[in-house]
Length: 261
Length: 119
Image (cartoon, rainbow over all chains, first blue to last red; front, side):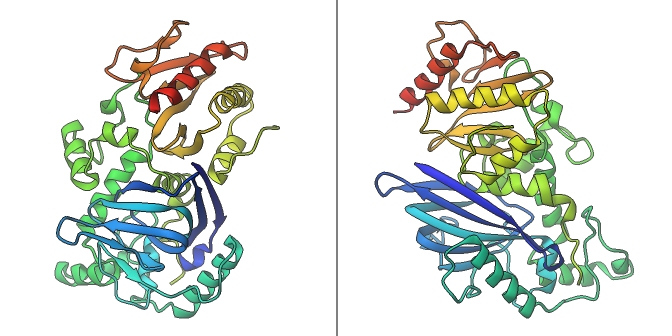
């Protein structure tokens, strides 16, 4: 199996963090499973070749992802499976993107979209079409961004009632502030460079007291959100999400939400 | 720095960002792992660990001060005839490398065994 992953920096003023292209080639057609955990980002997916199946939960069963879709914020893990050969393009968006997205946002779903009209044979062409679409369609839902780059709430919301704020969050992100914070907390832990080899510090050394009171608190939140214990997660292989997360952590997290609305 | 570019842009960026003190050692180890295990795909996981894997993760590279550690996730299954694997956990074993004259034969043997055990 040969995997290639290309990346191109996006346009932060539109909330586009980066574009990517992943190709997977195998000697014979096969299916690769991927355990996708919740992340504080939106992803646009364009399947150029191959198929992507999604197993959301037992009730919904397995379904084929549309050729173009927008992955909204998830509060629970999603199992994806890729059929090879696979060529997948994508764009990763900051949370702030949702505040200027013209359509309705619901959590835990893949919204069918049609942003790429012409054949996208390379990353450049895909990126230009997505940028063009996002620029043309953006329509801010509020006068200023709701969240600051450090994930704190903007000052302009200070006098809003709890109920009003809950509605604003739900309308913009499809989730409550608390659910967003829970996702963020798990990623504060994952952003660290953890080394679980023998004779090295164990998980307890990586628990951030400001976020998780102690290790059981971390384990509980982590398992609830990802479906795996921290150590299980660290040994779990992922061909797509690992790359997306690395790119997000290493480059774009400080820029999250820095969008000119 | 001259090295065989990865098919993964993020890996290339990661290597480009390594500091000059550790980069030669890191690249020598990477070349050795990829020579013994051409089937491996490289990716960066958990912010700054290079991981070699096929359909599952097998080896994690952790860069420390003046050393590079290779964590074999299923190290318990390796026949350690060189005695270079550390650890007493239930699964993982670690090979710590501190200088450029490390035992390349041993590393290649561990990598080949890792791939063989997967089948």
